[in-house]
Image (cartoon, rainbow, N blue to C red):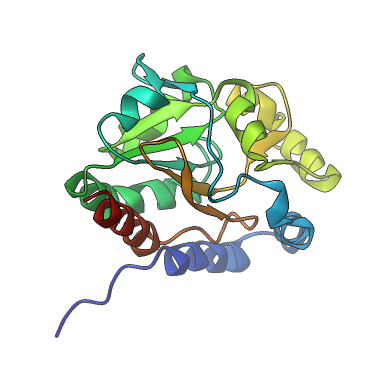
Length: 225
């Protein structure tokens, strides 16, 4: 009997179930309400679109290298996976999942995978080391690219109060000094700097499955061939 394909949706649903069983109801409700607000306010027309041609840009890889889009595209398509920050529990489920289920397939197809967060490199490097990630992890300094892509959100008032009650704002954790974070997002860019696939997840406990991304890269590779 074959083993069922690993599902990121199920892994994140398990995380939520654990919280339902263990968190104080009021604390849990703040989390649920913030995610629901983001779902309710989500407008696909406001973020980067398929078919859009991008200007060149650079990101800071956590190991010190500057990643320039045009240089990455010289090797093949680039898949950007935006995530929140190194201490985010959902990100610590999603990124290892992408290590197992996505990175090897993209490597075979000649595509480059880059995990992207606004967190400063000296703090962001923690998640790469913790999971021995086999793909690039980079800082989007000051959320510059996330803002251009239209994928940022700001903590609502209840979430800000909850964060401060734990000892500090999210801006202190990320090193950005703001309440802004990217919504989990996948952007696939072809060698002409044209966006070929976009998936934004306003609910950070629902993120792109690896198979969907691989399918898009495979289709892109077939066209290029």
